[in-house]
Length: 125
Image (cartoon, rainbow, N blue to C red; front, side):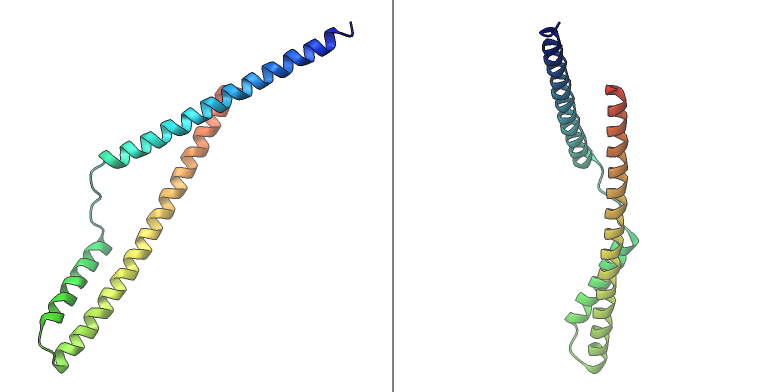
């Protein structure tokens, strides 16, 4: 009876290793599929609509460009300073909005990946 125990332990260990290898291959394939799907979606999605912050920045930069073309007077100098401040403020608002969008997308992607991993784990078990 003694030689049977090591044989059974060896068989169980080999089966466990085979299951782990199979699970790793499935995880790798799922990661590749997810990456490809994300790339395809990004490549073929319509361009995003211009946000309010982007519109404000475009207007501010247009005004700044216009003011820099005018002859330098006290009035135009004041307008140049105002246009510069407006553009700077618009840049800051755009950066804040883009950072918020990135945070939201990262959180959403993380939640989707965790859900996918849980679903996949449940399927294996």
